[in-house]
Length: 138
Image (tube, rainbow, N blue to C red):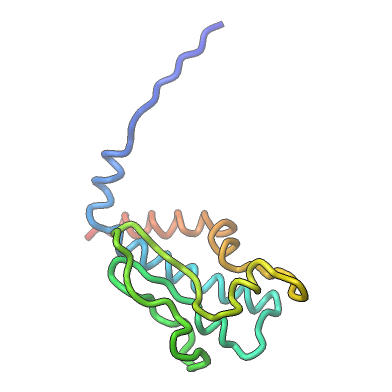
């Protein structure tokens, strides 16, 4: 009984297809994460004032992601700001002081995760979004 395997390095082809689209993909992923995380927070009943939901933000190489909410429920400094050092980086989250307590819980507060689930549970949507961007071309 024999087994033959052929491994192909598709990295050069993939990198060629990216063709400078990394920042666009990161921005679109940030918008998707922001939308999904906001829905998870609402679904889990982690909304009191709306401040956490309004503070969900992201940063990419091109700068800070826009706020999801048009209502100014967040306070100054609640959202992430700045830019990443790499074209392929995306940073998501919130600067609200209790954001991590909602995500992982602590004494008296049960966990209602929204950061990681908004990535892991929706990985197929991120893949489809990337595919759509690459098919659009420049």
